[in-house]
Amino acid sequence: MKAIRASLFHCLRHPLKGHGPAFEYIPDAGLILEGGKVKALGPAESVLKGLDPQSVESYPTGLIVPGFIDAHVHYPQLPMIGAYGEELLSWLERYTFPCERRFADPAYAQRVASLFCDELLRNGTTTALVFATVHAHSVDALFEEAQRRRMRLLTGKVLMDRNVPEDLRDTPTQAYAESRELIERWHGRDRLLYALTPRFAASSSPEQLATVAQLWDEFPDCYLQTHVAENKAEISWVRELFADEVPRGSSYLEVYQHYGLVRERAIFAHGIYLEDQDWGHLQRSGAGLCFCPSSNLFLGSGLFPYRKACAHDIHVALGTDVGAGTSFSQLQTLNEAYKVLKLQGDKLSALEAFYLATLGGAEALRLERQLGNLLPGKEADFIVLDKAKTPLLERRLEGVLDIEEQLFVLMTLAGERPIRATYVDGQKSDVHA
Ligand SMILES: [Zn+2]
Image 1 (cartoon, rainbow, N blue to C red):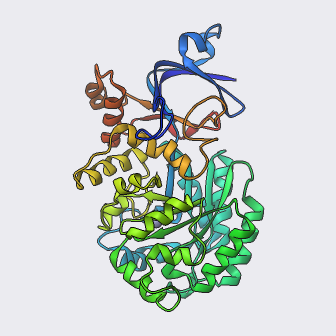
Image 2 (image 1 turned 180 degrees about the vertical axis):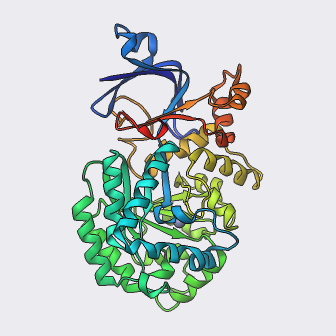
Image 3 (image 1 turned 90 degrees about the vertical axis):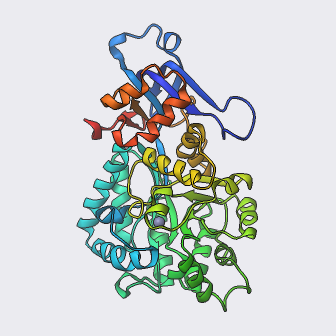
């Protein structure tokens, strides 16, 4: 058993939907952990009563929030983050594919996977839905490193059998056999979950997409991650490639729908240019979208219609999309999300922002019974933000009692690296040591 004392904030529901309190803020909270789960939570004076103060980890300037959930990120792109000058398709050709080619070497994959997991934890991300590469061993490498750190992590082998360099292609048969083997080895083991991962419609043949659906029928509790409607050139290309395969006038999302891939537990990254009919498909299926503001700005892809997604009751998660995204930090990503909404004449409140990065992500991944806030019984993944981490933060937050203002400043000044500690499965990670 372990006890922690600090301020605590977590979301209890979507800030704009439902009834009852949307969040809980306890200025002086006690959090008791046992067996990797939250055992008790409440005001310190009652929850920690009778405990030896020496046994309590105290953070006098700390604010506990749930661990962040990054619902779209590419671990093989860590070595190429911040690559200059391109839009999506030329960026893939020029930087991404050469970088992913290096993962043919299992030792290289292992080294990057280890760095990647530490980088997530350093930034307070305790759960991520991650693209590996086309190489099956790249998935083993990441699962092993996540398992070693007791993380809840979802990943899968990238499936792509056309329109990418020859040495990065698989085939429908190989996609099926290797994914199946990985699912059997990893899905549901410790805190690890498998995600079927066709890169995007342009890089999978119709046969391969049909294979993915078949595999998903066989393992319906697996996830699916892919990209949709990120960039205008990409959309025209997908239309052209599938012109003879899908009904005339089909949208990009409807290509996936045609192959049976729009279901609950699917997370579609971007969705900047979805068409009118797509919102209904997403809503009825329960599939989620991932908002990746830093990536969308960096590649100049466009502005995600966040309000439209909310109005259609779509589950939206937040993603860094490293390496097109330029930071592993979900706080920094929220900072960019705020600006993406501002450019659309809107704004993202701190409550909505923290919901997106925590409980909203958990709901999109159907993991809200395990993750997303720190109610008793949930998995004990959380971080301690330090309101006095730098002189600037300390000055800015001096006398700010309102929790929403505190949260907004913490996300806006993400560059001050306000994370003091990351706890995974009830244990303090050593990345901040
Ligand atoms: Zn991506």
